[in-house]
Length: 124
Image (cartoon, rainbow, N blue to C red; front, side):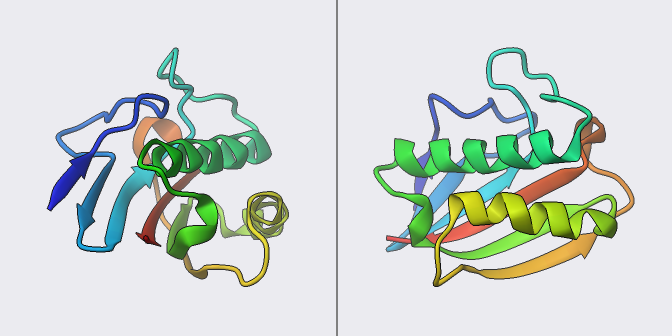
């Protein structure tokens, strides 16, 4: 296994790697909507948070020489499932068909009071 560390995405806020490469599969750790410079939430607005999370994931993928279209599976955690329509709108700005497989789960809370967190599995 190889540890992947992004120079663009926010630093990890705990003892974990941005991603781990195992063979041709890459497991990306969950990203929350942190600005990589300030390490603060980008906004309290859900749409802005969703955009930042996808941007952070894109940076991790690109820093390892990959792209978002190689993501096979997303797991998305929302603190309010009512934000699904906005999530779908934002996601369509980052992905084209065929879309990755996806699971969306409502949770009671996320780190730093984020409204969204996404982890991904990428195939090289």
